[in-house]
Length: 310
Ligand code: SAM
Image (cartoon, rainbow, N blue to C red; front, side, top):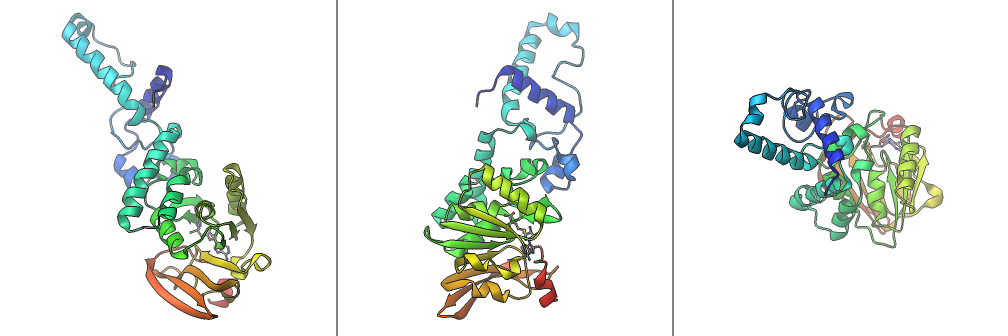
């Protein structure tokens, strides 16, 4: 992308001001606290706050030597061009940069790790995950990791989102229920595959934020409810597919009752604070056919589930 010179200079200054404040190792490991990471991780270099952006006096002798002038100008131009892609501050990352990161995530972390359904891959390549995470986390929105979204909750790792979506085997005419809206990201992915998506979040502030994000991005076939997903959404059921994105010891009975015949339910099952198993249950003529998929770690399902299955 060609950017105006003034914009590039702004980017360079921002980079130089943050220069040396944060370690790229910290950024890569994601160990910076949100307040620290805001504006601090560039996927590039770490240096001291000095150099090429004109604050340090330039020695007169430099300008007396034409070779040095040529070298210095070339270096300056090189840095100027490189800055548009390498040194751009997180708050200033462009849509193109995010789209590129998203494509690379789909190839490397999803297709590369065995996700095959072309509709799922396309949905994952389309939904702007960076718009579902707090601004301070945007720079790492396309890394294959869970990220904090506030209220002690997380947006799931992209691979896990893709895997669970693939396991649901959703057809375009189907209606899906999600328990655990969180940021709304998983619901947005589902909305590309299903006719209607119903999603329930127990924490009101998260439900409200997800509702706003989904509306702003025109995900018009998604309906968000604030409440305890243990009870499902009876008025809107039965559903062709149900996804629970928080872990419980057992499948809540109301959810099973709202799964139509031939439907699929995917959820993490197991003890809270321990590794859980991701399972898929098919409703085959009213009987459960359970498949154990893989080990996962999810935040616990709260509310009635914890009272019924302590
Ligand atoms: N799917 C989300 C996304 O795309 O951002 C991530 C879900 S996060 C791993 C789990 C969510 O489940 C949290 O937001 C949590 O508040 C919610 N949750 C936990 N227990 C719940 C319940 N009983 N009913 C509804 N939501 C619940």
